[in-house]
Length: 120
Image (cartoon, rainbow, N blue to C red; front, top):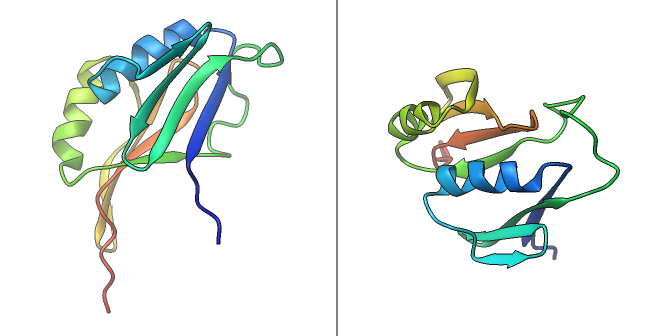
């Protein structure tokens, strides 16, 4: 059995992303090593850091989208929008879940998503 325990984003501007996600997550990085910053977010370690092969904004923003789960999608959407995050899609309902999509300073998509509730 596999367990997704971390997510890393490579960037040429890791400090910009770290400052952005510090605001989104509402806390300073739990780990700082050189140009790498990381946060424990639920059961996943989320990190951003320098990657020399990444240049500019992402070219395929929707290829990989990661979700931050919250029961307060609409409230968190307003808070994060007020931080200056680029809104990709306002909150909407998909079956039993609420979802909202943003882009970070490198153009990577991330979403707020309410806990998925099975109809069974």
